[in-house]
Each structure stands twice: as C-alpha cells, then as structure tokens.
Image 1: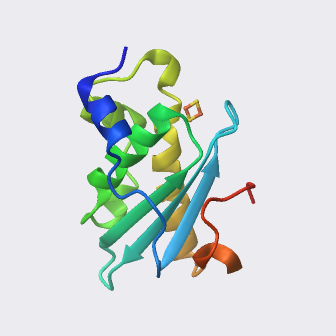
Image 2: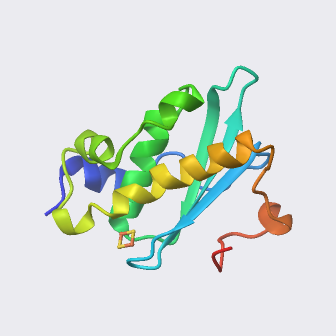
Image 3: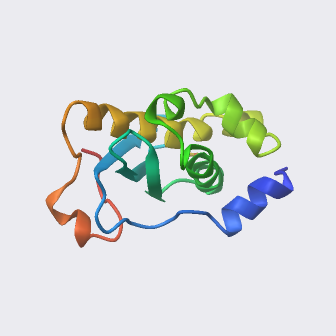
Amino acid sequence: MYSDKVMDHFQNPRNVGKMKDPDVVGEVGNPTCGDIIRVYLKISDDEIIDDIKFSTFGCGAAVATSSMVTELVKGKPLDEALQVSKDQVAEALDGLPPAKMHCSNLAADAIKNAISNYRQGKTGLEEDDQEKKVPHEHH
Ligand code: FES
C-alpha cells in the first residue's frame, strides 16, 4: 500500500526530534484525525532555513511526509518553503494512498505557521519547549 520511500521515511524519519534553540516554532493539528505536528526552525539572517526538526503524534504517513518536507525545505529560502504543496510532498514520496493525502498537509502547514510566526516577530515557543518531550495539547 505504501511506496518504498514512504516506508523508508516512516522507519528512518529525517530531522525528527526537538531542536535545542529554535528561532521559531510552528504547530498545526489535523481536524480530520486529531494528529498534531510541531516544527522547529533555525533561520539565517537572509531568511534561509538553516535547520529544521519536527515532532508529531501523527500516523505513519504523517511521520513520512513530515520527514520528506523537512528534507525539501532545508537550505531553502522561506519564500520557497511556503510554496511546498501536499502534491509535491506526495510526489517526492512516490505517491500516497488517497485516504492519506490529508496527512501530507500537516508538515507543510506547520512550516507555514512557523514562518508566519517568524514574520510577525513571534517565536511560537512555549515555556516548556526545552523540557517537554512531546506536546500534549493543541494551543
Ligand atoms: S491520520 Fe492523522 S495525520 Fe495521518
């Protein structure tokens, strides 16, 4: 049902975990399934994504797509990262089952949320971001 690439990114997700000192954090919840994803970004002075990490409570497809999205946007300017669509993500993974397409929105949306926080001068950080292993609720 899943492509080799999906399985690979699910089993060995890239850029997973929390970032120690992020410049900005973004988070979205998926209303369809209730899954949550958080992304942590390091952004350079000229608006390049220097580093990115994600943590998620999501399903396997959410893990795989988040992993792929972080690979797609790492080293890219913010404006390019904003253009990443779920179709692009699915394509980069050699396709996703139709029932799982909504999952691929999560990471891209979380990145958009982070960038919008950044541009509004907000960090999106929570007090316990350094301590907490996984987010327990959606703010
Ligand atoms: S089922 Fe929730 S993100 Fe995939």
